Image (cartoon, rainbow, N blue to C red; front, side):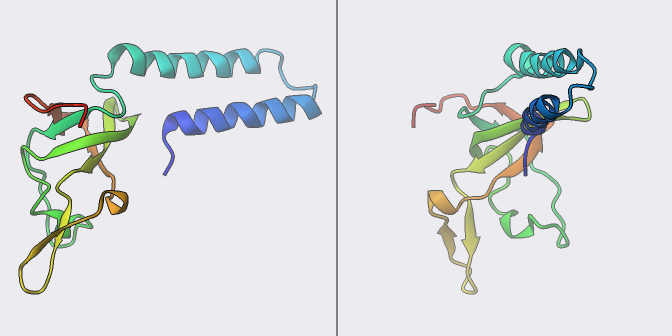
Length: 141
């Protein structure tokens, strides 16, 4: 799943290809796309509370029912769980963070918990309402 930034960058590339073929496009379309892209980047660089690669913590436990795709992760998607930001976006007036949890695991039929290998971990999208500073945790780990 791409982010809004990915889509804007793709749109800019498409515009460049079309502009090379179709000179009848408005002269200011490139300016408009550059302005939108600049505004988007500025939003993240100046106002987003976290950067990609930072370690954060869940500030509250999400409500997860049996029908949720996250139900099998209910045991580790809890307040205080530590995660790394893998990507970020902006949706409905909130920053959204795609988090990879270091304790992502699954429970076998005997009730034993097994950690996922780091390369098999999933990304979980949480709005800024659920994400906080990871105090007392080394961000270099």
